[in-house]
Image (cartoon, rainbow, N blue to C red; front, side, top):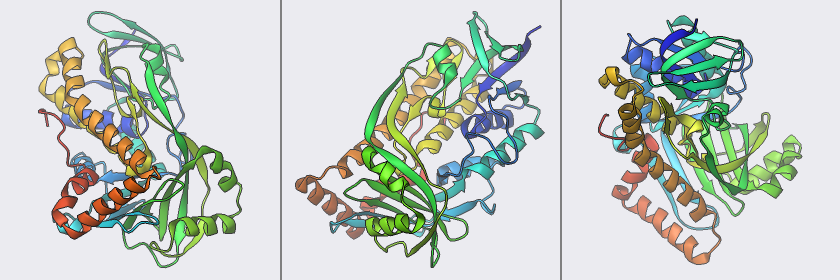
Length: 395
């Protein structure tokens, strides 16, 4: 006999787990299941690696309403100041949380412990968990979707939420294409220890090789995202620790202090991509399964979390319409503009600062310099950093 659920979330990573817990908190009568392909242990989960993510202040506040975020946890660090600069040019600007009467612009969260904490909350909840397990077949009927799992389990759901990442096998089962445009750049990520501490100061630095970000994290460390041409990545990955730190210091300068230690390095290609549709029959697609953006602005998880917010709110306001065509259509309408705006702005930022044109360089410098000279001009950028964006009428 198939097990009956109102909602089945496919994917138990950061977005999937947050989504299931959010729906359960806001809509306690909803019967929810989570299907996660990988076994979660105290040490390992493929989605919970050594990266760090930036949480915008709005995301922090939302997670706190769900009791899913503790700003005093050892794996979190506040961002109180962000400096944006263009190496080799005079323009720069600084944004501080105090200017906007906020305790922070956001937080940096280490993915591994945060992800395991979310999974533990799933285990302790009334949510049914099928893990490790995966969906191998979906049959659509008028009032539900019938899911067959690798284990042989049969589930029926009024609504499927696809949250199994950028390579989403579920999206492929549904026949939803994911349109991608690869960037010419890839990214190196690593944790970097700095000699004098970071003072909760984050940096966005644009160089001739590509953009760089340093995000403050625990134990006097920065989370580094270093973007460069794909053909350069292997040579930087092959450097020993001293050589890599020297190259990083040379490329970034000493604005963030002296880099003294680097942890494990990883690299990955960068793409701009979006699912051809955010919805299918009794199905919505969220998080990285729905949209892939350049990491330099730190907006990826925040965008996915806004998917979660809108969806949870929609379920609360339309419980009798759960999964219907009107329901999924409204979700798509509510989310499309925010997703388009963030993806377009992030892509434009990357392309603007990756262009070596002297005219564009002068324009960038004037723009950044003007922001520093006239604080009112910082407001749109600061609001974007803090996640204060228009999301749709339901919020």
